Amino acid sequence: MEATLPQKRTTTPAEKLDDLKRLLEERKAERIVCLDLAEQGFFTESLVVLTANSARHARSLADDIAALCHERSWEFLRAEGYVVGRWILVDLNDIVLNIFLEPVRDLYHLESLWGFVKESTT
Image (cartoon, rainbow, N blue to C red; front, side):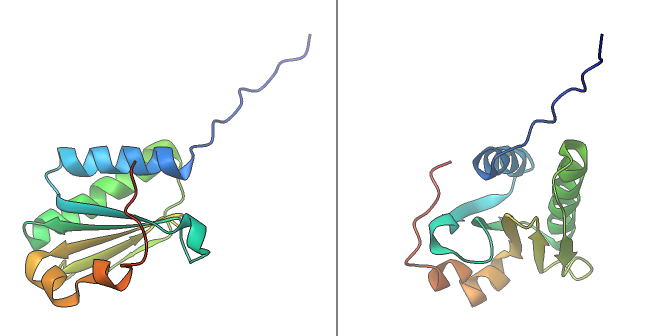
């Protein structure tokens, strides 16, 4: 009798986005906006913009995202801006997260650049 290896379950971007949103809400991230870029043929499936209460909170959120990716064997390409913590970009390839402090988010208003894209319903 041949032994069969268990099938590795792949997570869809929508399922991954749901898990990330749940994590972010649990960790008290604010003003979470998810933009669906899948139909646009851009660099990623979803763009997430959120606000942290402090640089320490922003770094903690980035760390929690990295830990979840490691736990679930998701692709984690890089995090930029981690040391300063005012705007941390976390690139998961199919999902890109932007963790802002409130004044920086208000300054750049990143969501307005993607105004033609619908907000994700997941």
